[in-house]
Image (cartoon, rainbow, N blue to C red):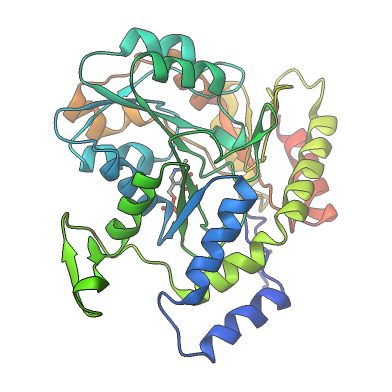
Length: 373
Ligand SMILES: Cc1ncc(COP(=O)(O)O)c(C=O)c1O
């Protein structure tokens, strides 16, 4: 019997052009960092209207690097959202900091700026915002709070490449902005990520952190380099950069298709009382990375399993981080701490959404969900 294929919740779109560009690198002398790293960085920075981009081996590496060059260390506190992928907070923990979670806004599902101010202490170093599902946070408020309190804004925009806040591209205004190029993200390099910044000092530090902390000093000899601070090997290969450059050329098409699919979902599910739909505030352009709906919590498991049984590859983004055993044990968080994030999670189901999705599959998702609720 042939098993019916599952419609995944997210997926890459690699075409012949992409493949041609990757193969060119395999026929050249460069495999790891070569000339395409610089080219990809310039293209990403230009698209996001940032002064600098540093491309790295993953979004997780990008977070680790940004936190490190921001000087986040043992004893610091960093304010962030519990509704995010673990890496946002895990990397803070690896830097020795305590993640101070605050609850989300019920409508955008993003960090609630009104709550940030209440949690700032002498130990607070930064605010890490997450543009959940590709919807930018409320940055006028967040940046003002950060400025007034001498804090950095590090924006986890792993969902949000291509999104806009009040006409400004994501990546153009935070102290550092993090991207991921994982296959489900808005463009892919296989694994990969980037940090965007307008700050030259951060840029220089990020470049050396990516490559063991090496700082070349050719005046002392062409071979000569020094380590002032140790770094990692977080490099991205040239063939990944070839893919990234080629993918970035299609970001407009990808975003347009994501939007088209959400419009179809919105229309199909409008008025179904049992489903809460994700929204887009009028002051942003969402990148629509995922389409998380909410159903009644008592029915979530049943609906989720029905969809899976019918080959709809649904997911849940995410169980709030404060509910994970590590965060409970290490920092004393507990159920009930962030009721809005918890209520969202109890009913959350992410429906498939990716640019290459066929009309037939979109209709299948719509009909199967309507049948399930
Ligand atoms: C919000 C968020 N932050 C960070 C990451 C980590 O990115 P990567 O998988 O490229 O390491 C992800 C990836 O899923 C993410 O969704």
